[in-house]
Length: 108
Image 1 (cartoon, rainbow, N blue to C red):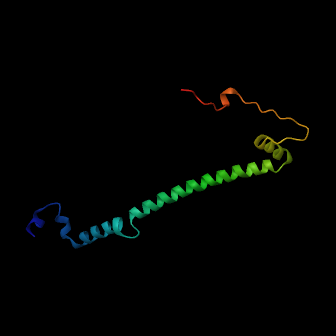
Image 2 (cartoon, rainbow, N blue to C red):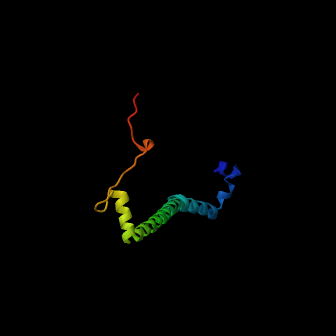
């Protein structure tokens, strides 16, 4: 025990209360089931889930607006014409495609 008494860094550990406090702090920070590391990990998961929740709420609002728009007859007709190229009877539809919007094969 001679080196323990002479080393100035280990001198505070002669007191049993400080030694027990240090062991307890290390145990609580790293090894316990409710440790600081686990709390840190869980907090980051909660933050990620909150961000995901905000994203889905924005998407729900966007979908509600789209549903509201499609609930009218004009909105439904516009959607059918633009998406599925539907037409009324005795009506002709011309689809104009510009050269830069066409997919072409490039010859090497």
